[in-house]
Image (tube, one colour):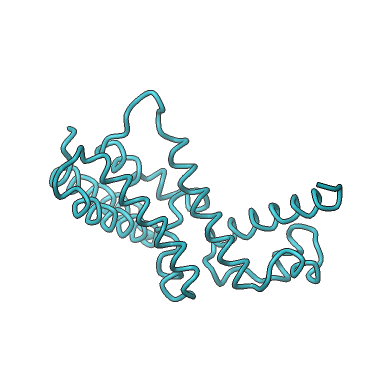
Amino acid sequence: MGHSQAEKAQSHERILDEAARQIREGGLESVSVGGLMKSVNLTHGGFYGHFDSRSDLIAQALKRALTDSRTNSRASMDAARPVTFTTLVKRYLSPSHRDAKGTGCAIASLATDVGRADERARAIMEEHIESFVARVAATLQGDSDSDKQALVAVSAMIGALALSRAITDTKRSDEVLRTVRDSLIESIGNDA
């Protein structure tokens, strides 16, 4: 790779990283091409050397945001201990995760935006949702209904996290997290 190709690749990564950050914090519509390019010290005109369209940028940045979210989640787990349903639910439905809007679960942050987006963005989100469901199902130790239980758990966790982030009263927000967390562990958990 020549020097200019390496620089272009580095610029592309900077653009994607910044767009993913903006999407996670402000939603899909928060990204303007001009503002994004300015924030990474590149010209607006250079955008089309990296992306076919704004839609292409949004799809790639969404994928980056979701992948980063999954990577952050896995990195926060203790690699020496197996991930159980209870530990996964407790970590996901915690005040620290609620407060980590920029680095926490991007599914909870972006699901409603993506529901109104184009098919490409929805397909990217769907892949990550299915991966999350499979990850939760794997913690259910082979129960015959593990996929259905995981789907219920994932839906409840994403919904509770999204609601807790929308509630301004910290005590009530904590109550949402605690109530759903305890309910899931009691009704689905098999590793207590």
